[in-house]
Length: 302
Image (cartoon, rainbow, N blue to C red; front, side):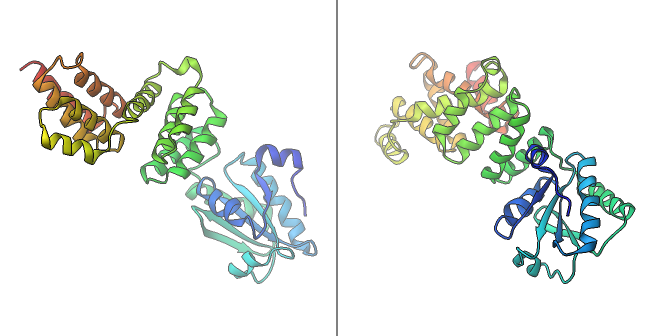
């Protein structure tokens, strides 16, 4: 069986050897990014020695649109049994964690090429470039799969270390995972020339808001203070900070608007300044930002 050289394998990882132990990681999970073609073979199998190099060449020619995973069934029988492999060579195409197509027995080079052409056309929207890692990262983030999202943005970062969007999303993933120190560390290591980019300013402001909420009393305590004294602007301001840091952003905005309406100049316009930071952290496209800015303007020009 022809296997790719170690140096090329480490460089591209387009053709890999897979075992029962790492099948989930190397095939199931990886197929969520790019189609993985699983080649079940054995050293004594004559047709395998013909089919293997054909698959290898196709993987190299397609430059990352597919991956080949080699499984020696003499050494790894669990996965082969689970997929009901009864003869070899046997080929299974995995996409998004599931087998979607395949064939058994030796095939001509033209037949293999046609099989892979159809597979890539149907399922090959994800490839090994940073744009697709970014797209997949956003999809995982939207689905609240923050660890998967982080992994994809980190892969994208390997290919483009000066992309502010990638850096900002890595920080956001850490924050959603509750790993605030990791978020701060990553932000601190962002290239200095990116510090003025809107994406970086947005997450830097978000972390600044979190920093200001540290050491404050908890939500329940601050609510009780306001029940006793509804005019306590300091407690109301602190409560807004804590609420925002706990993702109760809409309520935080309303409290800050109340403060600003009562006393625009309180604590050097602290309420207005804090609102501005929240709007920056949310982004101008956020519905909370749009509604909040509208309410702020109506108070300012009343």
